[in-house]
Structures are given as structure tokens and as C-alpha cells.
Length: 451
Image (cartoon, rainbow, N blue to C red):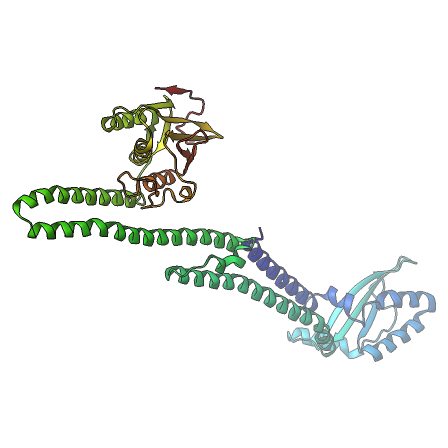
């Protein structure tokens, strides 16, 4: 991942290194005598060349060389031997020493810069002390010319830093602009996932953020769509019982007392249906609310209680339970109980009385699976993809219901982080499988207990 953190950190370190390097370079150019001795053309190789000339050609030739050097560079040179006395006359004017003493006495700045350099001859081993007096005007002119390339380097560094800073700024501002536009579209429910497709391909923090935002936007769009669909379905489902109630009330107003007695049971039945529908809608809506802290769920005892409740309404129906006795899940008991109750109710609705309903639970690939199978006719293949959709009822379904049982079961399982798979069993009948993730309370080594 090309992290923005490291990019910004590298940019700051590059800027610091460039500024420090340029500052050190300028300091060496403007302040240090050694820099002048090694760089100024008038003194750079003078000691070495003059010593060789002095030792081979003699003092007179060496004196003429210094005078020629002064005419060319306007730099005075004096050479002292190991005794501290001049070995030749040099090019210092006689009044220079007196003027230098007077100026130092009055703490005034001299019109030249005095530099010294010691050089040892490699041939004779004698040491020479070279004293240079470079006029300030000459030194300033040389320094001004020598600053061209450092200033050019500084200008190039400034341009480079400006370019990198601009690229860094654009790499931050442009993704933020796309995210801002996506947030604006999300607020207007006009968000399209491909709007952040390019940004999501980046391998930095913005790419991760765009992928997370896409998932969040897709989830929110799905919730908004499901809520709108739910409102449309609810309005449609409520319209029918309300219309029947209105008709029954209108008939009751014009009916005789004997006819009213026949209409009242119908009114009560419609009110019961309406109340049951509203209860299921509220149960479905409550699944989206915050369920609170998870609690242990003893699955075996929960299934036995559900079997006892089911046999109150269908005492002739046998329900076989095969589940580990010590299986304890981590979740919300009321929510999971409602899901299993709806799956059992669906199985009771279609399973023949002479064949048992089979409920099993066990580990599978590190997860827990709970299956509910009946031996009924099963579902049509075309209806399988829509099973679990709110208010959807299969064409062959003749039993009373509003198509919310499987939808509530699916939503409850999803709140536990699992999935609900609905389909026909290969040997006949309908099969519902709850796939739940593992939890710290689960014991994968538990053995099923059939009851």
C-alpha cells in the first residue's frame, strides 16, 4: 500500500534535507576561509606551484611569478620561511602593514581579507607560510559569481518541492472532492457505486476509504430500497383487510339484527387478521433495531420448548430433534427463537402428519448449522429465489399467512451474522438451513443427542 503517511513524511524530510544542504553550502561559500583557499582561482594551487618554481628556478623567478600573479588577480602574496622571516620580497606594499595596524587599532574593517596557508614541500620537507591579502571588492565579485550555481540549485530545489507539493495536494484534495460528491449523492439517495470506482482502485488510505464507503453506500441504498419496498408492501397488504372491514361495516349498518349476528364473526376475523399482520410487521421492523448485549442460548432446551409449543396446535405431528445437549450459542434468544419458531411453523403447514419434521444441529467447516426439514411437496424452483422476501407467498400456498414468516427468520439469522438457505431436499420435502458463525460459547466437539 502506498501510504499517504509515508508520502507526506518523505516530502517533509526531503524539504528539510534540501534546506539544510543549501544552508550548509551557502555558509561554506560565504564564511569559511578553507572554502576560499580551495575554490578561489587566485590561491587554489598557488602554494604548490610557487614552491615548485621557487625550489627549481630560484628566488628571483619566484618573485617575478608573484608580481605577475598580482597583476592578473590583484591579490597580494607574502611567503615566510620556517624562521618566520620573508624569504622573498613578495608583493605586499610597504605601507600595507602600517595601514593594517592602524585599522585594527581603530576596530575598522580592512579593505582586504587576510588568509594564511601553510604548505610543506614534498621534495625538501621545508615548510612555507603563505599570507594572502584579497581585496574585499575582488572577493565579493568572486562570491557573487560563485553563488550562481548554488542559487540555481536552490531555485531548482524550490521548483521540485513546489511540484511535489502540488502533486501531494492534488492527491489529497481530488479524492476528498470525489468523496464529498459521493456523500452529497448519498444524502439525496442518488448514490451510484461506480462514482468511486477509480478512487477505490487506489492502494492507499483513500482507496481503503472508498471501498468502505462503497460498501456503506451499497448497504444504505439496500436498506432504503428495502424500507421503501416494505412500505409499499405494507400499504398493499393493509388495504385488503381494511377494505373488507369497511364492506362488513357497511353491510352491518344496513343489516337486520339477525344478519348482524352473522356479520360480527366476520368482523372479528378480519380484525384478528389485521392485528396478526401488524404484529408481524412490527416484529420485522424490530429486527433492525439495536438488540442489546448478546446472551448465551442453550439450543437444545430452546428447541424442546418450541416442539412443546408446536404440539399444542398439531399434537399428531412428530418432531425429531438431533442437537448436542451442551451446545450453547452466543446471540439473542428471543430473535433466534422467533426464527426457529417460524421455520417450524412453515414445516408444520406443509408436512404430512405421518412423516416427522427433522431438526438437526452440528458443526460444519468450523461453523454451526441448524437444519429444519419437512416431507411436504417442497417449493417450486421458480419460487426459491424469492422465498424470504417480505409478503411473498408461493402460488401453491393455500394456508393463511402474509409471507412474513420466512422474511423474519432470514432477518433474525442475518442479525446473528449467519445466513438462511432455503431449498428443496434431494429426497423430497423442504429444507431450511441456518448457517451461524462460531462463537466462544460453542463446543465443536459436542455430540448430537436425538430426542
